[in-house]
Length: 237
Image 1 (spheres, rainbow, N blue to C red):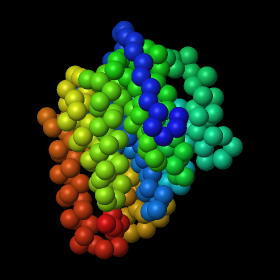
Image 2: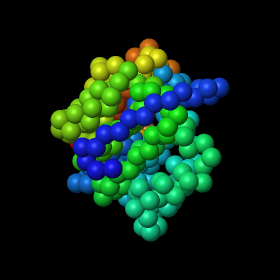
Image 3: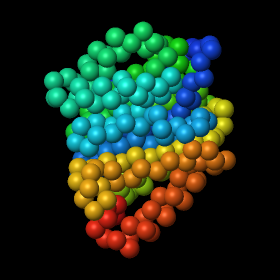
């Protein structure tokens, strides 16, 4: 999909509890930061949706999530042989349950791809912008994704601050039609881990909370304050 494109599909999945979610995958090419932020009326959504490898891709898998396929997608993109759309299409072609899947991905150099299966619970769709892609299902409407992208694009600062703005705007626009429960954020950067170990800059989860995005904001503020006391511990502003 190209910047500015939108898509939406409707349908009903029976006998399966979908991971009703709104997520954003994005990269900051100036800093090398890339990651996924997500919120949902599904407990511990952060344990399933975000998959990130610094310098390669950030992937969100949701609706009926498929973490193994997300990891396989990152492996495929790491070889540099496929364009994001082609890699996603090829892997989904092998998935008999693709009609209940939803994926959003961005590569380190800002290319994007997204897929919403025909049986994802409405509203379900994607919204693509510069270096970012939002996706959601079981939403109150397309305005959730539009608000997320506007919040992300209109916020200054590092990727984690822009992610928080996107989730906050998505929540304010209606979010998950079933309500609130969990949120998460992962940001990776090559060599950006704690004291240069690994690539994980931010890895925060709110697994069960009445206002998970607000709680995620609180945790991020605590993390920033803690890291300020150790200038070489990552999360530079």
